[in-house]
Length: 294
Image (cartoon, rainbow, N blue to C red; front, side):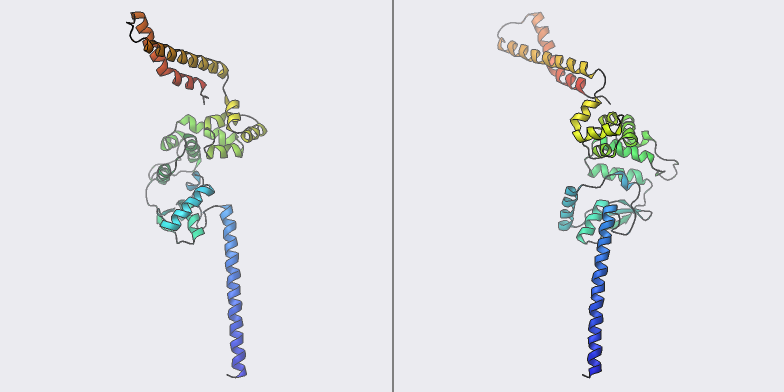
């Protein structure tokens, strides 16, 4: 081989090495950019597509749940498709995020139905164990979105319609709306996580922001205490009296059973029936009296 050929070969090897290094740098930059996007909008960019507003109604999984989903996908693959609508991710942000982390090619389908809101609500109610308060918060947000109605029906969903779709009361949706409009972010997040009932959170949201933040930091017990309605102390005292009456009825019935050989009088028989009724209904009545209304 001539010197010119040697130089040409050496130059080619250098170019190839430089190209490989540039490719590695480019891959590293893409990976870092992906991580930044993942933090800014979890699960939004596996397909390079934005997230549909309806998909944002439901919170992303926490890291523990995501780890479990990722392990399942690593072993069994993607069981459910990722649904797209109008070039946006309608359902499946968590699966997209896990697919990205695993380097899997995601399985996607395009939604072609008439009612995307009912579709995504149905999917999430089936697969998630949401509390009534969490569903009320979703319903409140759904009622605030632009129209996502079935074809041929105009206008956005009302609070009542959203409540029916999420299987909650309209009053619960109104409480959720109060939490969103007047509550500090940590209070809203507590309802999202299912850590505090929306009725309690709505009462706490009436406080000043600094008071709300302090109550959230203290925990659910402090929030429940602040949410107690006027006159609850008297109701608690009445509940205690019901508890004592229930205990007395239990002792009376126990004594009556020990004297089973005796023939009870008509009056005693009536007392036994009354005691049994107290024993049956007393605990539930005490719980109702102690319940925070909302």
